[in-house]
Length: 293
Image (cartoon, rainbow, N blue to C red; front, side, top):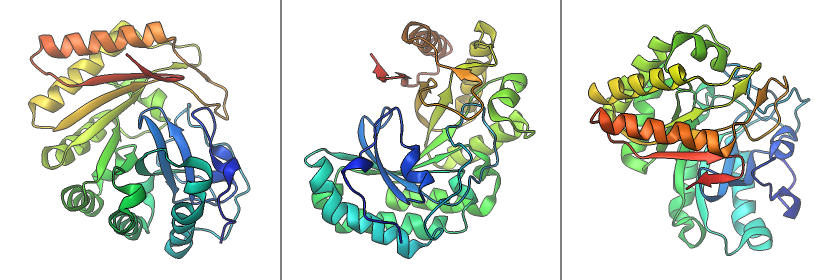
Protein backbone atom coordinates (compact mmCIF):
# COMPACT_ATOMS: atom_id res chain seq x y z
CA UNK A 1 0.00 0.00 0.00
CA UNK A 2 1.06 3.61 -0.54
CA UNK A 3 2.85 5.42 2.24
CA UNK A 4 0.59 7.47 4.52
CA UNK A 5 -0.37 10.98 3.47
CA UNK A 6 1.71 13.75 5.00
CA UNK A 7 1.79 17.52 5.02
CA UNK A 8 3.48 17.70 1.61
CA UNK A 9 0.38 16.08 0.10
CA UNK A 10 -1.62 19.26 0.70
CA UNK A 11 -1.67 20.29 -2.95
CA UNK A 12 -3.18 23.48 -4.29
CA UNK A 13 -5.12 24.56 -7.36
CA UNK A 14 -2.05 24.76 -9.56
CA UNK A 15 -0.63 21.28 -9.04
CA UNK A 16 -1.61 17.88 -7.67
CA UNK A 17 -0.04 15.50 -10.18
CA UNK A 18 2.77 14.35 -7.92
CA UNK A 19 0.53 12.35 -5.59
CA UNK A 20 -1.42 10.60 -8.34
CA UNK A 21 1.68 9.84 -10.39
CA UNK A 22 3.38 8.35 -7.34
CA UNK A 23 0.61 5.77 -7.19
CA UNK A 24 -1.44 7.47 -4.51
CA UNK A 25 -5.14 6.66 -4.48
CA UNK A 26 -6.20 9.57 -2.25
CA UNK A 27 -5.01 13.13 -2.81
CA UNK A 28 -6.32 16.20 -0.96
CA UNK A 29 -6.44 19.34 -3.12
CA UNK A 30 -7.75 22.88 -3.05
CA UNK A 31 -10.39 22.87 -5.79
CA UNK A 32 -11.67 25.92 -7.59
CA UNK A 33 -15.04 24.39 -8.38
CA UNK A 34 -15.50 22.71 -5.01
CA UNK A 35 -14.70 25.97 -3.26
CA UNK A 36 -12.11 24.51 -0.91
CA UNK A 37 -10.76 21.16 0.23
CA UNK A 38 -11.60 18.26 -2.08
CA UNK A 39 -10.53 14.70 -1.34
CA UNK A 40 -9.61 13.19 -4.70
CA UNK A 41 -9.89 9.46 -5.39
CA UNK A 42 -7.70 8.02 -8.15
CA UNK A 43 -8.86 4.79 -9.79
CA UNK A 44 -5.89 4.50 -12.15
CA UNK A 45 -2.60 4.73 -10.20
CA UNK A 46 -0.46 2.90 -12.78
CA UNK A 47 -1.40 4.52 -16.09
CA UNK A 48 -3.87 6.91 -17.66
CA UNK A 49 -7.03 5.20 -18.84
CA UNK A 50 -9.46 7.40 -20.70
CA UNK A 51 -11.81 7.35 -23.68
CA UNK A 52 -10.82 10.93 -24.59
CA UNK A 53 -7.45 12.54 -25.28
CA UNK A 54 -8.18 16.15 -24.37
CA UNK A 55 -5.37 18.57 -25.29
CA UNK A 56 -5.65 20.29 -21.91
CA UNK A 57 -5.38 17.07 -19.89
CA UNK A 58 -2.84 17.46 -17.07
CA UNK A 59 -1.85 13.78 -16.98
CA UNK A 60 1.74 13.44 -18.19
CA UNK A 61 3.26 10.07 -19.10
CA UNK A 62 4.47 8.56 -15.82
CA UNK A 63 5.96 5.25 -14.67
CA UNK A 64 3.28 4.58 -12.08
CA UNK A 65 3.87 3.49 -8.55
CA UNK A 66 2.40 1.66 -5.63
CA UNK A 67 0.72 -1.70 -6.01
CA UNK A 68 -2.05 -0.88 -8.47
CA UNK A 69 -5.63 -0.20 -7.50
CA UNK A 70 -7.56 -2.14 -4.90
CA UNK A 71 -10.47 -1.13 -2.73
CA UNK A 72 -8.53 -2.37 0.31
CA UNK A 73 -5.67 0.02 -0.50
CA UNK A 74 -8.14 2.83 -1.09
CA UNK A 75 -9.83 2.20 2.26
CA UNK A 76 -6.42 2.24 3.97
CA UNK A 77 -5.53 5.63 2.45
CA UNK A 78 -8.96 7.11 3.20
CA UNK A 79 -8.75 5.93 6.81
CA UNK A 80 -5.24 7.35 7.11
CA UNK A 81 -6.43 10.73 5.90
CA UNK A 82 -9.40 10.75 8.26
CA UNK A 83 -7.50 9.36 11.27
CA UNK A 84 -4.24 11.29 10.95
CA UNK A 85 -3.50 13.50 7.96
CA UNK A 86 -6.62 15.66 8.22
CA UNK A 87 -5.76 16.77 11.74
CA UNK A 88 -2.10 17.33 10.84
CA UNK A 89 -2.51 19.22 7.58
CA UNK A 90 -6.06 20.49 7.13
CA UNK A 91 -8.18 20.84 10.30
CA UNK A 92 -10.46 22.71 10.73
CA UNK A 93 -10.89 23.14 6.95
CA UNK A 94 -14.25 21.80 5.74
CA UNK A 95 -14.05 18.81 3.40
CA UNK A 96 -16.22 20.00 0.53
CA UNK A 97 -16.39 16.72 -1.35
CA UNK A 98 -14.99 13.29 -2.00
CA UNK A 99 -14.27 13.48 -5.72
CA UNK A 100 -13.81 10.39 -7.88
CA UNK A 101 -11.62 11.35 -10.83
CA UNK A 102 -7.84 10.82 -10.97
CA UNK A 103 -5.77 9.59 -13.92
CA UNK A 104 -8.58 8.84 -16.33
CA UNK A 105 -12.28 8.33 -16.91
CA UNK A 106 -13.69 6.76 -13.73
CA UNK A 107 -16.61 5.04 -15.46
CA UNK A 108 -14.05 2.78 -17.20
CA UNK A 109 -12.96 1.26 -13.90
CA UNK A 110 -14.33 -2.20 -13.04
CA UNK A 111 -14.06 -1.13 -9.38
CA UNK A 112 -16.30 1.93 -9.69
CA UNK A 113 -19.28 0.37 -7.93
CA UNK A 114 -17.17 -0.80 -4.96
CA UNK A 115 -15.46 2.59 -4.75
CA UNK A 116 -18.70 4.56 -4.66
CA UNK A 117 -20.13 2.22 -2.03
CA UNK A 118 -16.96 2.54 0.08
CA UNK A 119 -16.90 6.34 -0.12
CA UNK A 120 -20.60 6.58 0.72
CA UNK A 121 -20.15 4.26 3.71
CA UNK A 122 -17.18 6.23 5.04
CA UNK A 123 -19.03 9.50 4.64
CA UNK A 124 -21.85 8.14 6.81
CA UNK A 125 -19.48 6.69 9.43
CA UNK A 126 -17.27 9.79 9.82
CA UNK A 127 -19.67 12.73 10.19
CA UNK A 128 -17.20 14.64 12.39
CA UNK A 129 -15.11 15.30 9.26
CA UNK A 130 -17.33 14.42 6.31
CA UNK A 131 -20.77 15.66 7.33
CA UNK A 132 -20.65 18.48 4.76
CA UNK A 133 -18.86 16.52 2.04
CA UNK A 134 -20.64 15.80 -1.22
CA UNK A 135 -19.90 12.63 -3.15
CA UNK A 136 -18.82 13.75 -6.64
CA UNK A 137 -17.95 11.90 -9.82
CA UNK A 138 -16.27 13.76 -12.71
CA UNK A 139 -16.94 12.14 -16.06
CA UNK A 140 -16.36 12.94 -19.72
CA UNK A 141 -19.93 11.71 -20.33
CA UNK A 142 -18.97 8.60 -22.30
CA UNK A 143 -20.11 6.43 -19.39
CA UNK A 144 -23.69 7.48 -20.08
CA UNK A 145 -23.52 5.40 -23.27
CA UNK A 146 -23.22 2.22 -21.17
CA UNK A 147 -26.68 1.33 -19.87
CA UNK A 148 -25.30 -0.58 -16.88
CA UNK A 149 -23.00 2.24 -15.79
CA UNK A 150 -25.70 4.82 -16.36
CA UNK A 151 -28.23 2.89 -14.26
CA UNK A 152 -25.72 2.48 -11.42
CA UNK A 153 -24.87 6.19 -11.40
CA UNK A 154 -28.57 7.00 -11.36
CA UNK A 155 -29.11 4.75 -8.32
CA UNK A 156 -26.10 6.28 -6.57
CA UNK A 157 -27.43 9.75 -7.23
CA UNK A 158 -30.82 8.82 -5.82
CA UNK A 159 -29.68 6.72 -2.86
CA UNK A 160 -26.35 8.32 -1.88
CA UNK A 161 -26.69 11.86 -3.19
CA UNK A 162 -23.95 11.36 -5.78
CA UNK A 163 -23.32 14.58 -7.73
CA UNK A 164 -22.32 13.93 -11.34
CA UNK A 165 -20.14 16.54 -13.07
CA UNK A 166 -20.56 15.81 -16.76
CA UNK A 167 -18.16 17.20 -19.35
CA UNK A 168 -19.58 19.03 -22.37
CA UNK A 169 -16.79 21.07 -23.93
CA UNK A 170 -18.49 22.31 -27.09
CA UNK A 171 -21.77 22.81 -28.90
CA UNK A 172 -20.40 22.16 -32.39
CA UNK A 173 -18.76 19.08 -33.87
CA UNK A 174 -15.44 20.62 -34.99
CA UNK A 175 -14.62 22.19 -31.63
CA UNK A 176 -15.80 19.07 -29.82
CA UNK A 177 -13.39 16.90 -31.82
CA UNK A 178 -10.56 19.30 -31.00
CA UNK A 179 -11.38 19.46 -27.29
CA UNK A 180 -11.98 15.74 -26.83
CA UNK A 181 -9.24 14.36 -29.10
CA UNK A 182 -11.81 11.71 -29.91
CA UNK A 183 -13.76 10.33 -32.86
CA UNK A 184 -16.90 9.98 -30.74
CA UNK A 185 -19.58 12.20 -32.28
CA UNK A 186 -20.85 15.14 -30.25
CA UNK A 187 -24.44 14.14 -31.00
CA UNK A 188 -23.86 10.73 -29.45
CA UNK A 189 -22.41 12.29 -26.30
CA UNK A 190 -25.29 14.78 -26.14
CA UNK A 191 -27.86 12.00 -26.52
CA UNK A 192 -26.24 9.97 -23.72
CA UNK A 193 -26.08 13.00 -21.46
CA UNK A 194 -29.72 13.81 -22.21
CA UNK A 195 -30.84 10.25 -21.50
CA UNK A 196 -29.09 10.25 -18.11
CA UNK A 197 -30.03 13.80 -17.12
CA UNK A 198 -33.70 13.18 -17.80
CA UNK A 199 -33.60 10.71 -14.90
CA UNK A 200 -30.91 12.21 -12.67
CA UNK A 201 -29.53 15.76 -12.35
CA UNK A 202 -26.06 16.73 -13.51
CA UNK A 203 -23.66 19.63 -13.29
CA UNK A 204 -22.32 20.45 -16.76
CA UNK A 205 -18.60 21.29 -16.79
CA UNK A 206 -17.07 23.03 -19.80
CA UNK A 207 -13.43 23.88 -20.49
CA UNK A 208 -12.85 27.15 -22.37
CA UNK A 209 -9.24 27.71 -23.38
CA UNK A 210 -6.90 28.40 -26.26
CA UNK A 211 -5.84 25.27 -28.16
CA UNK A 212 -3.13 25.39 -30.85
CA UNK A 213 -3.66 29.13 -31.06
CA UNK A 214 -7.41 28.76 -31.55
CA UNK A 215 -9.57 30.72 -29.13
CA UNK A 216 -13.28 29.99 -28.62
CA UNK A 217 -15.23 32.15 -31.06
CA UNK A 218 -18.54 33.90 -30.64
CA UNK A 219 -20.00 31.25 -32.93
CA UNK A 220 -18.65 28.51 -30.67
CA UNK A 221 -20.37 30.05 -27.67
CA UNK A 222 -23.62 30.48 -29.59
CA UNK A 223 -23.52 26.80 -30.63
CA UNK A 224 -22.97 25.87 -27.00
CA UNK A 225 -25.99 27.87 -25.85
CA UNK A 226 -28.14 26.24 -28.53
CA UNK A 227 -27.11 22.75 -27.39
CA UNK A 228 -27.63 23.52 -23.69
CA UNK A 229 -31.04 25.00 -24.45
CA UNK A 230 -32.02 21.94 -26.48
CA UNK A 231 -30.96 19.58 -23.71
CA UNK A 232 -33.05 21.44 -21.15
CA UNK A 233 -36.03 21.73 -23.51
CA UNK A 234 -35.92 17.97 -24.03
CA UNK A 235 -35.95 17.24 -20.32
CA UNK A 236 -32.35 17.32 -19.07
CA UNK A 237 -32.08 18.27 -15.39
CA UNK A 238 -29.01 20.53 -15.22
CA UNK A 239 -28.36 21.94 -11.75
CA UNK A 240 -25.47 24.22 -12.72
CA UNK A 241 -23.14 25.06 -15.60
CA UNK A 242 -19.44 25.40 -14.75
CA UNK A 243 -17.31 27.29 -17.26
CA UNK A 244 -13.62 27.05 -16.41
CA UNK A 245 -10.28 27.64 -18.06
CA UNK A 246 -6.88 26.00 -18.33
CA UNK A 247 -4.99 26.14 -15.02
CA UNK A 248 -2.40 23.33 -14.90
CA UNK A 249 0.41 22.30 -17.26
CA UNK A 250 -0.42 19.69 -19.91
CA UNK A 251 2.05 17.35 -21.62
CA UNK A 252 1.44 18.62 -25.14
CA UNK A 253 1.91 22.29 -24.30
CA UNK A 254 -0.89 23.12 -26.72
CA UNK A 255 -3.16 25.11 -24.43
CA UNK A 256 -3.32 28.50 -22.77
CA UNK A 257 -5.83 29.92 -20.32
CA UNK A 258 -8.34 32.64 -21.04
CA UNK A 259 -8.13 35.90 -19.13
CA UNK A 260 -10.63 36.44 -16.36
CA UNK A 261 -12.17 39.24 -18.42
CA UNK A 262 -12.67 37.01 -21.46
CA UNK A 263 -14.05 34.12 -19.44
CA UNK A 264 -16.41 36.40 -17.54
CA UNK A 265 -17.63 37.84 -20.83
CA UNK A 266 -18.40 34.38 -22.19
CA UNK A 267 -20.19 33.43 -18.97
CA UNK A 268 -22.29 36.59 -19.06
CA UNK A 269 -23.21 35.89 -22.68
CA UNK A 270 -24.22 32.29 -21.93
CA UNK A 271 -26.26 33.37 -18.93
CA UNK A 272 -28.06 36.15 -20.82
CA UNK A 273 -28.69 34.01 -23.90
CA UNK A 274 -30.17 31.21 -21.81
CA UNK A 275 -32.45 33.66 -20.01
CA UNK A 276 -33.60 35.15 -23.33
CA UNK A 277 -34.43 31.67 -24.50
CA UNK A 278 -36.43 30.98 -21.33
CA UNK A 279 -33.78 28.50 -20.16
CA UNK A 280 -32.60 29.74 -16.80
CA UNK A 281 -29.58 27.86 -15.46
CA UNK A 282 -27.07 28.92 -12.81
CA UNK A 283 -23.85 29.69 -14.71
CA UNK A 284 -20.60 29.85 -12.71
CA UNK A 285 -17.16 30.69 -14.11
CA UNK A 286 -13.75 29.73 -12.75
CA UNK A 287 -10.51 31.46 -13.73
CA UNK A 288 -7.03 30.21 -13.01
CA UNK A 289 -7.20 31.22 -9.36
CA UNK A 290 -10.79 30.63 -8.42
CA UNK A 291 -14.40 31.50 -9.05
CA UNK A 292 -15.15 34.77 -10.84
CA UNK A 293 -17.85 36.82 -9.21
